[in-house]
Image 1 (cartoon, helix red, strand yellow):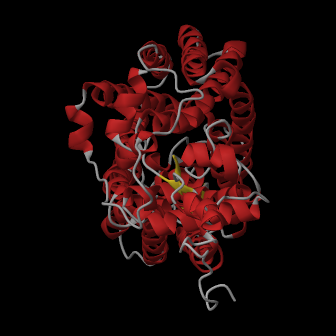
Image 2 (cartoon, one colour):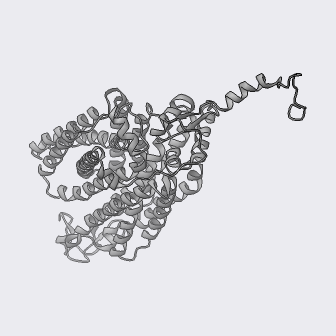
Image 3 (cartoon, one colour):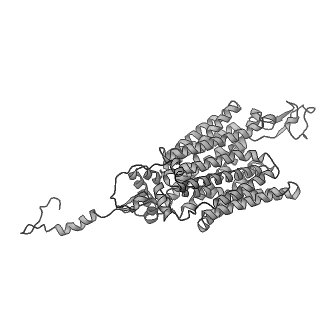
Length: 525
């Protein structure tokens, strides 16, 4: 057609088609619209449509896996009931409070030695401290893993790659734990399981929330914890079916394999990670997929750009240099340094209260399986209330309020004695304390990721998670004191945490920055 026809011209040599070509020529040199990911989601792709819903649900299933590997010790390491052996009436009395007061061989475990690690490895009397030691070692492994995989997910492996690795490790270590020949092998394997588990929720949370638009991110982020509580509730049913600790470890590790095979292949890498790593084509491909599934149209002349580039007049580039960051960058900047310190301190204090109160609540003396199930369900109203109020009141007021709510009831519980009706009142104070701190724990994740730019977000969140694991390690030792002392410590921790939150900035409706420079520029406005 036009490409093969001769050029038409007037007698004086002027191209008659020139006026027809000018509009096309002008269109070809039209300025490209460069948008940040948040702006593109809001303007063209949709903030939380079908794509984000599907991606969010699939990714957040990993939280249930973290619940399995973390809480399995409640059932595997519990001290089972005991009874007097047949024909040992002289050396055994049912009225004795502890087996430590009985003659060896005069009693036996109900359900046999394989019912728990306590029964099989003899973790009673002078060896009872080893139960708490295993728990502490697991959380120590979580603390290390959170830092390692927080860095790897920001750099080489990405969010999805890191989630893949930790799920593989969880499955392997879980299965091997089931064949532990002795206590110390069991303890080492729990450290390794903790190392991989520390990266599960961290990577899943960031991967699930980064493709969500800024006005929907708060509620979406806080909804991830339903999967964790749901995982605990499901675990109680699994433990009820598999009554031996070895079978339980196998049963609780199988879901990790299923997640790797059935779920993870359908999860997409974060477009934010693609963007900061200089993979512009793959980032744009993901944004186009989001727009298509959400029933939106992403114009051809729109491209992604990092924060500062949205105001520049460069033409579209096929690739960009990777933008990287580390914790050293966080510490060098006064803006992010104080935020990191506050996030670490608040996470540490909240973890002490949450895990400490959780240990007190499970000691109600009722059915263990029902207890764990009800505790998991009881946290869900706190998640719902904080999610509803998050975008109405903001992150900062809600963080302060929930911590003070929990701290106030803990202090009241410390002032009560543990006898008669006051014992019940103290128990109610503990439940209300957990209710408040569960809400805080929930919003802390979304608050923390909004405080830091993409290049160092997972590294900063990893530090906060490490601090939370330190609190989890310390909590059992506080509970050992008994009486009103644990309540007093938990109450003070909640009040202090609320005071520290006063010094954090509000992040409601603020953009999710990509780079350190972009955040500094944006916070100046």
